[in-house]
Length: 370
Image 1 (cartoon, helix red, strand yellow):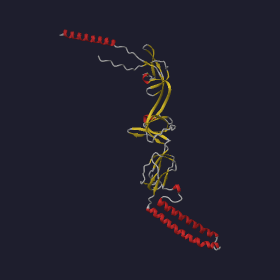
Image 2 (cartoon, one colour):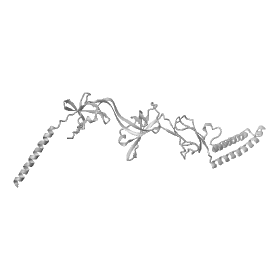
Image 3 (cartoon, helix red, strand yellow):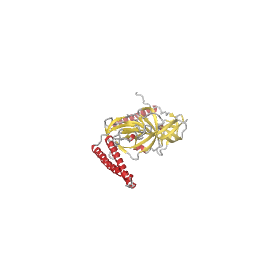
Image 4 (tube, helix red, strand yellow):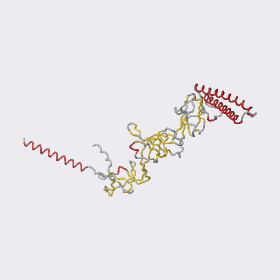
């Protein structure tokens, strides 16, 4: 029994020893790792973050009536270019019965007062001419008569305004004629002939008849995430790309960053605005979706290398590369780096254009199945 156990142990030792020899033999048969190298290149490196948004006019003007009524006729349509003072629409007034009756009563009262003052005037005038009445007394009578005439005319005009929305003598200031207040383009006409509109006053915003804007003053409105807002600042350059306009980039300048963020889908977003440079004559429609690349840093035509070639000291976290000194021989070279776009990084110090950099993390080709 003891001999059998001893024999089994010896066989196990021999098998283990043979396996170790075979493993070492196979290990020695593997090809040694051959490292490749790459040279630094000259690159333009742009560090940027992207914001999504749309193109809108800097200011939109809402044209509202100052009298209620029915749209009788509209003289414009969306897309028209108009100037300040151009006619937009005409309103037909539907008078309020109570207000109309009050205005009519005011006319009657003013006429009664005028007739009374005229009788006094006609009575006092011949007496003044005969010297019976003093000039001072006659002047008072004449002033009262003229005031009564003016009040009667005003009451008549007010009655006409209440009844029709206009009266003789108002000209272009008639309430029924709606005119443009700015030079620009008509973006929208939300009403049609026959629609009822409400006047704009202290208690009501009123009905919008047209939306106008100067399309030569367009801005980008977008949002950036809270993780990016700390990297940007006012006056940074923007590169705007518009989905509907292919192969074209528009320059802009960031001129507003919201001081307060808004929660959207669980993330805090900050509004930003950038003014487009309209030296470009391309027509941009309001409301087009766009992306803005915010240029955080830029380095033109500088010595650069791929980020993947850079290694970092595990203790100091200082960047370095390995430079080829001979066939498969490399030495460490510390670096000072600049702007990075995530693919290439600017080399400020430590490398020359002719240096060969070790590709230390190269991917080994897959071995063929045997």
